[in-house]
Amino acid sequence: MSNAAADEATELHKNAAQDVIAVDSDDNAEGTVNRLDAHTGDGIRHRAFTCLVFNEEGQILLAQRAPNKRLWDTSWDGTVASHPVEGQTQEEATEERLEEELGISPDQYSDLRVTDKFEYKRYYENAGLEWEVCAVLKVTLEDTTLDPDEEEIAGMLWVDYEHLHDHPEWYRQLRLCPWFEIAMRRDFE
Image 1 (cartoon, rainbow, N blue to C red):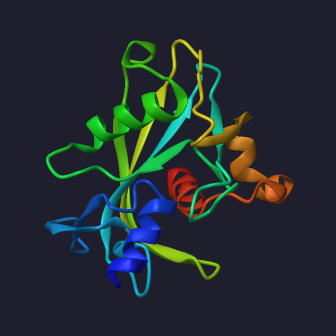
Image 2 (image 1 turned 180 degrees about the horizontal axis):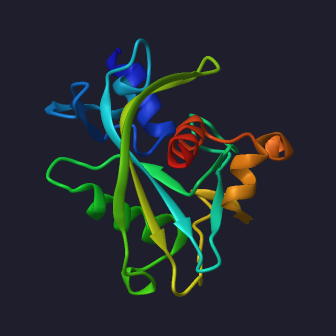
């Protein structure tokens, strides 16, 4: 990527200048790479996470990605997804994103845990791709007070998790993020 293209991308996407952790297929770190480089061209496999947020009734919180997201904009995620930075655990990165995106603080839950990990690669229109080794974390909110950041979250919806899994065709209009669909399918296997 040329310097001018990188500068323009950084201006358009504030996190484009950040680094992500490149990994092998076993999630062993192989150094850091630019986040935009990891998500364009052929991509670079990197570490990521998705966190499934539940309430005490077993409903999952779906969060619609903001329209300014470069990849999977306005698609529905279950619930937040991002990338840890070097030196950060999956749990620490998740706690940070829960607070930044939804205003969920650690005193609202006590059971944040990693439950799965998988590799996937998916292209999005002509904008780029995700090629990630994605950890799945789950958390149940004891206090469901939310304060979403409109730069990150366009909408929210509590749905019955099992019903969503059993009847995805009834939710087709939501356009679910691919990493969430994979995580949910694996969760019920």
